[in-house]
Length: 90
Image (cartoon, rainbow, N blue to C red):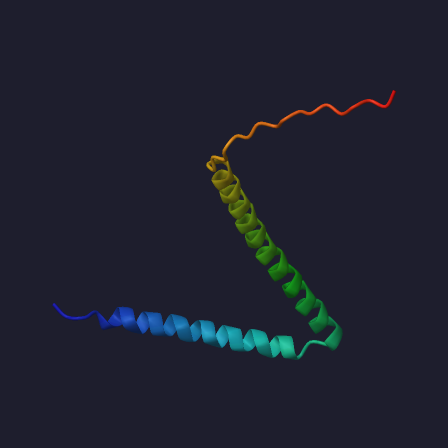
């Protein structure tokens, strides 16, 4: 029972195929006019910002709910408020 080298070669070919496709993609991207490159750049920035904002919002909501739960479990001592009467000006 030995190592199946055909699986290793298949993964290597797959990774090289991805590398070649990405090289072709970036070559096409470099050949675009500046205006189109800026549009693509801003689209990527906006999409990444929305994705990061989504995860930040989920984390913030989770943190606030944990804070709310921990505040509910705090037992503060009860205090009585003394009511005093003030003399009326007659």
